[in-house]
Image 1 (cartoon, rainbow, N blue to C red):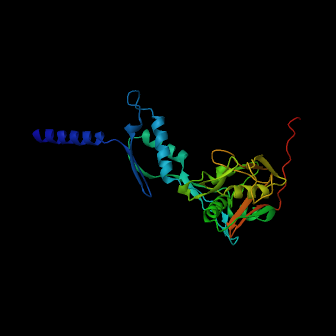
Image 2: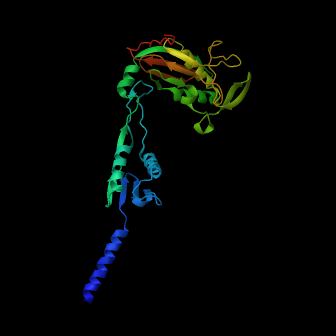
Image 3: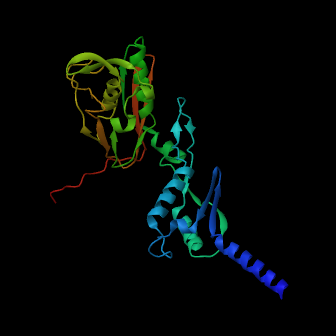
Length: 293
């Protein structure tokens, strides 16, 4: 009888120990090892059968941040050879939520790999090949290459807009594409025009890039939405043909009214700032709808 009692106590101890271990969801992936405990996602003082959706959302955002790989558009290099696109990836939220619900309402623990899905770039090799076939605009300006700081800024801004694709109906914002001109991004102090006076500031010289672009896209099929002139004339374009930009001030914005995307090719080298604009051989200008009808 005593032996039976001992065995019974051992059985009860093992059973209680097993019950004390909550069911767990073990997530594994490259560089990710995370264990999720069911009770961490319940409403502790309401009903443990309900999922705390706010906590689940935070989990999804954290996992997505860890697995996300940004897709890379196809581009053209300096020799006009196409550099193929790269497919990105992100968390497959729908599949993960389905697995999570299965785990939450079960009494078992299991391990799973994070479900992911591909994120495709907007510009692939096929599209880039098509929209680089027909040149619709171009413009060339000159600068003094001996001014190293200004030349450096022009080259940086030109590279920022190079290979940029604007889809039909989309707008291009110079400030939005180039971003804030800072020393951390490599921009240097160079002469700028402020209220009609010459001074020095980070990013001086990039208005030559925006002005060259303005002249290259001043054609049918491109609607200029925002463009400002300098407070004094500039030497690289004729009067009234410039487009001043400033991070905290003026921007240069235009809209693509073609039926196909347009491609910007920009290059600054050896004192020459060149912008060329391309699209498909089959591109036509979309007709504007008459708002009065």
